[in-house]
Length: 135
Image (cartoon, rainbow, N blue to C red):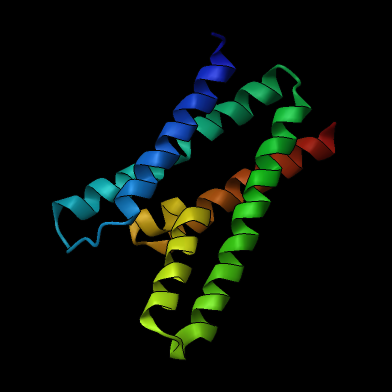
């Protein structure tokens, strides 16, 4: 198995771990720090993927990561707006929308510091856009 495939698998595993952790409400304490580290760690594999893609001239990988970043940021915005609009909706509807938010922006919810997840996706997006322009 090549290095790129391993990085994709590690990133998928990080997504699953962060998603599971995001479903648990966390009180302030040591677990909060662990979840923050997991959220930050979520962006390590794609960082290496971008690095490898630039070094080995693989624009397809950069386009995939760019598209995933755009999709996550766009769907996160939509899910947040839907959560605000559904303020008066039933509790069940609110839970479904929150679960949708967890699925589209897992590191943001897992860390409970929303700027971490949004910043991570934005960094990936703009890094990919920068290197795709240079090509």
